[in-house]
Every structure is written in C-alpha cells, then in structure tokens.
Image 1 (cartoon, rainbow, N blue to C red):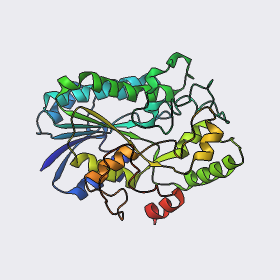
Image 2: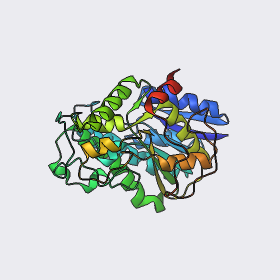
Image 3: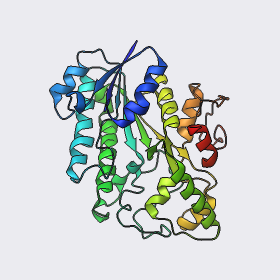
Length: 326
C-alpha cells in the first residue's frame, strides 16, 4: 500500500477533489497534514512527526496561502509558500521519500501577477511587463523571476507568483541532494463553476474577430486556460502512476483553442497561435499512463514528440461544461 502525506489535507481543494480521487484509486493510505489538525509546516518538529514515523512514499504538497487575495501581508507568501515548502522538502529528503508533488500555479509565469489591481484593458504590447516571451506558454517558458520584479506593480499577485517560482528554483538547484523526484503541477484558476469563464471566452473570441480587445488583461489569461476538478484528478492520477527522475513540471489546465484572433488582438507583437497556454505535455503523460483526459475519453497511441499533434483536438469550453457538470 502506498502511503501519501497530503499537506493542506483539510482545505477546500483537498476535501473536494484530492482525497476523494486518492480514495478512488485504492491501495493508498492518506496521512493528513494541516493546521486544522494541529500541524504546521513552519515548524520542523511538526513535519518530522508525520514524515519520519510513517514510512511515507510520496508527498503531495498542496498547503499554501492559496492566492493573491488570501492575505493582506505580502510577506506571508515568502514565509508560508516558499520557506514552508522548503521545510517540507528538506524533511521529506531525510525521510527518503520517492516522489514530491508540488502544487504550483500559472502565476509561476507571471502572466497575471501584476495586472489584477490595475484594471487595464487592451492589447498586451512590448512595453507591457505582462507580455509572455512566446505563445503558447508551455512548461519551458521563463518564470516570473527572470523579470525585473522591482518594476512590477506592488500587488500580492507578484509576491504569490514569486513564492511559487522560488520553490521550483530551489528544487532544481538541490535535486541531487534531495534524493527524490520533484513534480510541479502548475494550476490555472481552479474551479468547479465554469459558466462565467465560458461567457468571457465566447465574448473574447467574438470581439477579437472584430479587432476589439477590451477585456481586462488579467481576465484574458484567466479565460485562456482553466483547471477543472476533472482535469486535476486525471492529471494527478497519471503523475502518481508515472516514474520520474529529477525535476518535472506540467501545465494542468483545459487550454482554450481557436484563439488565433484573440492572440492577434491582444498580443500584436507575438506570432499568432491557436492557444495561449499549452497542456500538451500532461496529455502526453496521461496517454502514456493510460489515463484519459476526461473519464469517457479513449486512450490512443502515445505521443512521443512535442512536434506531434495533441492526442485530440481540445474540447471547446461550451462542450466541456456539459461534460464536467452534467
């Protein structure tokens, strides 16, 4: 039986999605870790009591200050999300675990980290700090840390994105000493309620065909890719089944497709593409592990090259809604 330490085990994400999914897999014992049950990832002894005494195979680290709006003290992102995560990794290394799964965020890329408070609309141009280096944004895209962060709007989103990116940076720099494989699951906005996303996406597509780019820039990224509970569960299952070495990262989202007009309208300096975010890497892994992207989807021949087409054409968001909530 695989023994999994789940941090943030009493939070909304864990109770609504992660724990039910793990229980469905079977042959898994969940060891909870959460402030609600008296644990604290800022205290080494608290981590040692769970990690060193329970023969843990895998850590799923979902505990964090979960978003830019969840604290008024920007220092908490560094304290909890970065330093707390490093504490978990260091004690997990001593426990000789095999796999560490880290719940990261699209804020790793800095996509919307400094836009949310500025209420800006219009194209994202070369003079705009929020412009991606290229599209679609895949796992190789540079993190927020490569930007001159001092120039970014002093908003919590900036510090949230940096706190996640610093954890991944630490893992990459110390993976040889840690002794386990590290997997980052970069989530977009997680939600089980998708109607408002669909409405914005349809409007964005419709207006972009007319050359209109008046959606808030932060919202632009929010509707270009979203993490549904269905996709999260399927992705996590594939990652748990797979064997890894070193550091790995995956975009966990339903990547909106048919966005070439949107890209032309909002990113006039970039080469037009059909997507803003890429989820090809996780789809390749899921196909390899025999896990369908959606429960009713059939697994086909594994993809072996980034240059090959995705497993299948991305399901339009309107159809996705019926699949997820019907």
